[in-house]
Length: 231
Length: 231
DNA sequence: GACTGTCAAGAGCAGTGCTCTCGTTTGTGT
DNA sequence: ACACAAACGAGAGCACTGCTCTTGACAGTC
View 1: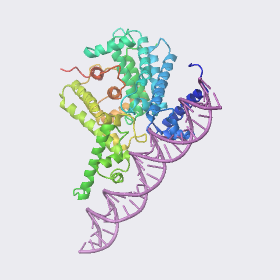
View 2: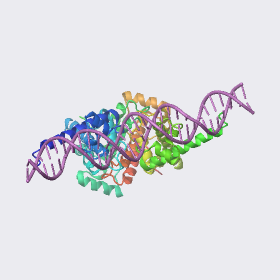
View 3: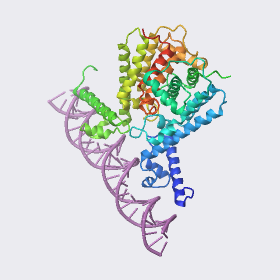
View 4: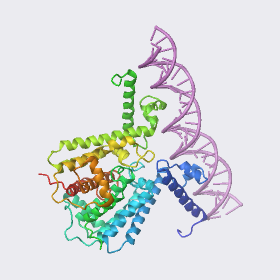
């Protein structure tokens, strides 16, 4: 029965999309803080109460936008990596980092919505964890695609951390050891740490403009990840 | 005339402090989003319009809280580093990292206010840049206090980045070269990237709990900074 | 053709940031 | 000692918010 869509269902789906579209427009223009249900309704020629047929609350609308943003940055990263030469892990890593940074700079409010202060209550709904993992999985894929370094850099995780990371590896990348996973996590947090600092203005006055510093750090991280130099 | 304080001035200063205190209480309890001028006034037995004699707008109150938060985490980092053995750079670095992380975990909403999505307009007022630099200066102090590594790790910044960083070095740490400044910047963004990811829930399901991963990363960063092993 | 569930609309509630006005208090210069 | 000006708290009020409830109209189904 999922195949046939009555006129009602079609109208509902279209309106849901339109609401998200207009909300995203306001989000991009003014930020999540100033996103107003009433303004969205007004712009769509509706009345505010009508929106509640489609999103039970403002937070649910924001959650929908969060999911879309995760998907957008994830897809952006995926296609950027896919466009890079398959054999050149370092180029793939560069492509990933630049994709994330460029997307963030192009959609600062959406980035802030996702990687900034969590806005609803204090914990993310379950629906967001899968799309949220997308970029991280791209990063893991890049690491997996690299030839194993003869002498892996860095320390070997031990104790509780080693257990955590081997457990994590068994889920997402069985052939990687705990040390590789740890390096990937460090690269991941470093990447988003830099992008967040740049977008949120913490690099003003130090690494400003941030492009050269970002490039340098990306290369350092590639070294740290054991990615071979580009041919 | 600055020495004598009339009763009026004293009352004003005290009330300003009380307002900030109550606002910080609400901030800690509910987050910046839900901080309400009216609620603060209500709790203080005032009327909302009276608050505007002390803070011209809600954003100005938040800015005051932001400055206080920067000072708090900065002082926390300073005293932690000061308490570590002077000759052990690695221990000082560990102390700094743990101080930042512990403070963030103890004051999540204040941390989010400062290192999360910027809330007012889009740019930080000028008054916040000096207190904001405090933690970074502690980090630089730790790096300066370390004996120079015989073979400094990492790449040498070149081009525009080298210019930026030597300029920056001449302002805050003349004896450091561009490579050392670059490493410090990377460590800085990495530190706050990890803390932000932990606090904002991005490590749930990967490095969770985050303590062991954080410790490991701190040690890796110490290696990267060229800090000698603890005696 | 009657019935049921969905829909947009409108009124309304409690709350917000902020402005303006109104007496009152407080400090200061004459 | 008096008068003037600045600062103050209180209150009313504006425009706005998220959200709820009710009402009447329409579409899809039996």
